[in-house]
Amino acid sequence: MPDQTPPRALRWAVAGSVIVMIAAGGLFYYAAQMAAAKRQANHDQVQVQVTIASHSCEPNALTVPAGRASFRIVNRSDRAVEWEILDGVLVIEERENIAPGLSQVINANLLPGDYTITCGLLSNPRGTLHVTPTAASDAAAKARPAMLAFVGPLSEYRVYLSSQGSALIKAVTTLEQAIAAGDLPQAQALYLPARVAYQRLAPAAQRLAQLDNGINARADYFEKREQDPQFVGFHRLEYALFQQRNLDGLAPVAQRLLTDVTALKQQLLAQSLPPEQLVNILVRNLDNLAQVRAGSGEEERYSHSDLNGFAGNLDASRKVVELLRPLLVKSATPLLAKIDSALGDLDAELDGFKVDEGYASYDSVSAEQRQQIGDKAKALAVALDGIDPALGLSGL
Image (cartoon, rainbow, N blue to C red; front, side, top):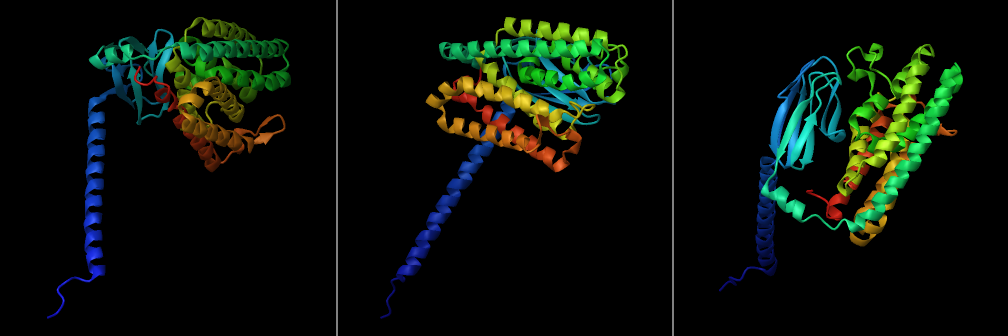
């Protein structure tokens, strides 16, 4: 009688098939659960659309519950615009350079309260954003971690702001003196160190909406662009120094800039910075670098000195990481290694463009190279974005 027992190899094959089927089923179940969770998270996140016209936004009065909200900003005007959420004079979230006919998304984690929203041109009427409390926001407030651990880093960051603020005032003073003396070559040479000094402060300075608009706003955000009388600050000087190559009428603009950067230092030291904002301001600055400034070269469109500014932004990020390093060593060593790697990658990318004491003109940087710079900046932003959850600051 023939043996009815299946060969051992066949039995193993059948068993293996069963295991594969079970594993596949498990993976399918896991993927389905993850997809459902993602859909639920997206469903739970409030989504609002705002349409910007030439001189208005619709709607311009918004109400959302506290927590995560997504704002899709649609630009129906004929020029690139920006949209911001402001808490008094402080910028909470923003999106710049939204091209005509296109839209961009701003994701924000909002605390209960009343905010202001900007609408395209700086001269356009502002709107309102009312954020209502929820059970989750009340619970998050109660679960806030002890602030004692952050006293040291925040105090040291104030020292950094003070020293960099003094450096900025000194640099702008010498620039203003060269302009007053009618020395165009000297003024062109002094613009660069003044601009780099500002970029080391930019992540913090960009929280102060009105003051920073006077210091750093580009011509795009004014009705008459470069010819608009409200167009002042660094980029007005840059336009005269490097495109017009003419100092006529520029002295009052330089004097106004000196007044504004002096006030900037004072306000940076007067404003309290919550610990959850210390990293957030860096992430926002680097996201802007990655998504807008690296590709377009529009930040320094007249002088093409963008790379020097990128290096200043990197210095600011490196400083905050050093201040938080003792906390990260204790609770997030793998994340710290990832951050250090991202810092090194962006630093190495920029180093490739060093020329003498500065960097190459940005109009000599190819589109592919600009993309690589943007990618490195984005990778650093993503790595830094992990700090708040690692230190118990997420969801606040």
